Length: 221
Image 1: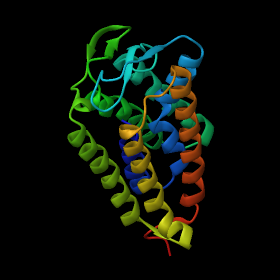
Image 2: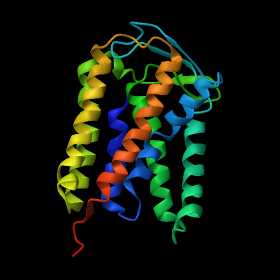
Image 3: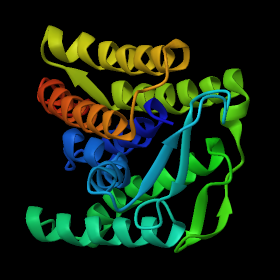
Image 4: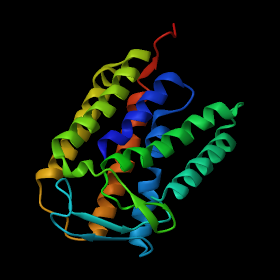
């Protein structure tokens, strides 16, 4: 899953306006950011195996430090603590929502991955395998992302043309990237997967910061 991970970010931004959207975009992909860095460092492993699932050719056979359930919980707690300290939020409730977005990544991955997500360390691997049902997995991604966008647009209002059209344009771009990955050739190497992923995560966080500054809570005068 790629595009769908951003749905919870948009939804939380709608109800917690004190949390910037760019930060929630980073939170949504935090475990994948860490995963890409660990892949580049040779710590976590993947292979390119065309046909291993109907949706993508990634054999994600070793990723205990980012994609185990235990690791995801620890990443979410660490992000919540770090954000409360950095942003000086007066209540833990706000920081907890950022942690929820981090943890949502594992839950959504569990729906689409084949059984390659360990519960802890590199053992007891789970995954419902919706990547083997391409149409269903795409409907899930679009629904989660679209639902988050709907909440974001409902609870905020645009100040400029960028604020009005930007959120929809970004969501459509995410879905286009998802579709291109389905029909395009397999990536040439794990390093390319990691670097391209990192590039997109940074680009979308920057875009989110720019667009979100062009919108304000709907109830603000």
